Amino acid sequence: MSKTAIGVMSGTSMDGIDVALLHSDGEALVAPGPGFSSPYAPGLAAELRAVVADPTRAGGDLGDLPQRVTDAHVEAVENFLLKTGVAKSSLDCVGFHGQTVLHRPEISVTRQVFDGARAARRLGLDVICDFRAADVMAGGEGAPLAPVYHAAIAAGLDKPLMVLNWGGVGNVTYLGPDEAILAFDTGPANALIDDFVRERRGLSHDSDGALAATGKVDRALVEGWMRDPYFGRPAPKSLDRNHFRALTRNVAGLSDSDGAATLTAFTIDATAAALAIVPSAPALWLVAGGGRHNAALMRGLSARLGVPVEPIESIGYDGDQLEAQLFAYLAIRSRMGLPISFPTTTGAPTAMTGGVFWARP
Image (cartoon, rainbow, N blue to C red; front, side):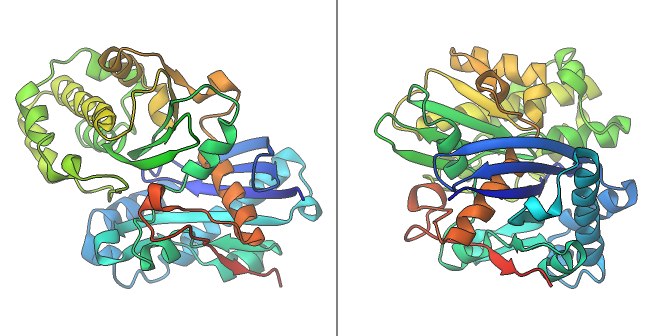
C-alpha cells in the first residue's frame, strides 16, 4: 500500500536543510513530489561546524543545541508545506535524519542531533528519526543508508551502475547485474574543499570548481593522503566528516588556487579508488549531492574513470533533493517493518530495520 511521507535531511556540508515529498510503497513504487531547501541560520551553522570540529564536544552535553536544530528542521517543514500547499492531512509521516555531529562506528557511536518527540509535538505529525543507531549497535557502520533507495530508482537501468553521492563525505552504491548491492563511503567530497575556501576566502564553496581550475595540483600531497589506511579497508565502510582534516592541514603552504586544486584532485582520486572494491567497472556513474555542481570534480572524475559521469537529473531525479527523498522512503519502510540496511551496505550482521517512531500528539 502506497504512503505519502516527507523526508528531511541536512548533510555534513551543513549548507542547509532539504525537505522533499515522496509517494511510495516502500519498495519499487517511487514517485517524488516537490522539494524545498532552507539555509541554516548563519550562527547555528557556525556553531554546528564548531561542534563537529571538536569530537569531545560532539560526544558530550550539547545544551539546547538539539532543540534549536530540531526547531530549524521543523520550520523548514512548515515552510515547505506553506510554499507547496501540501496538506498535513495528506501525510502519513515525516522522516528526519537530523544533523550528524559525530560518526565513529568502530566504537559503536553515531550521533545525529535531533529531538523526535519535540518535532512530533510541534508538527502534529508522526515522526521517524534516529535511522542509524540500531545498525551501529548491531555492529554495522550505520552508513551509507542510501543504497536501498538508489536500487529502487535505478531498477530499470542497465547494470553494472554506480550511484555516487558527493555531499560532505562521498558514498557510492554499486548496483550489479545480478541484483547485487555494495555500498561504502569513498572518502572526502565537498567538506575539505568547502572548509578550505571558507578559511581562505570566506566563501561557502568553490563555485563550479572555478578556483581549483586555476590551480596546480601537488601530486606528492595527494599520493601521500591516498596512503591513508582507510582506502585499504574492505567494504562496507564509513567515515566521519573529520577523518582527513588533520591529514590535509599541510595545504597551508599552498596558494588558494593550488590548495583548492589539490583537495579537488584528492576527492577525485579517493572516489575513483572505489573501482578497486566493486566486482566490475560500471559503464556509467550517476551523481547526486552538491558535488555534481562542481564542474572541476565532474570533469576530473570522468577523465579519471574514462566513462560518462552524469548528474542524477539525467534519469529524472532532483539531485539536490535525493537524500531528503531517501529519508521519506526510509520512514515509509521503517513503518512497514522493512529493512533499511544490509550486510553489503553497512556491514550489519543481517538485514536491519531502523528508525525510532514518535507518534503525533
